[in-house]
Amino acid sequence: MLHNSHNLWTGWIIQIAAIIAALQFTQWYPDVARARSLRERGLSGPPEPLLSSLLIPLAGYLTPVGIVVLVSGAGPVWLGVALIVLGIVLVKSLSGDKEAEPEVSR
Picture 1 (cartoon, helix red, strand yellow):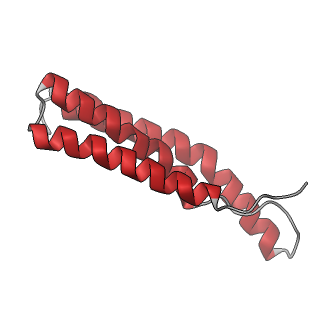
Picture 2 (cartoon, one colour; picture 1 turned 120 degrees about the vertical axis):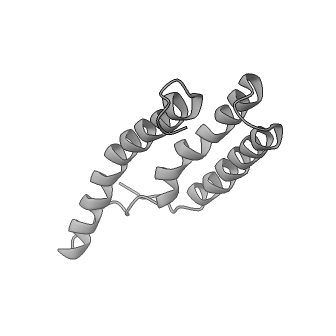
């Protein structure tokens, strides 16, 4: 499977997941580094972003992958259903963490 670029998993799903992870990390990490730097210098500033804000897009990607698995037959039916359910559950739980995040007054 790893040597076949025409395979749905290696040709599309894994590559798109890597792009989503890279884009999200590029957006998330500067805020983390800035918050840590300010905290180390004893200055006030925005809080460090939660890890859940990095993971929500990847968790959200699981649901469309599950649908693709079901539609294309790229895996067993249980895998497609499991990915859809896991994606929904993870997004809901990670979004709940974000709602618990304290607001910063500016």
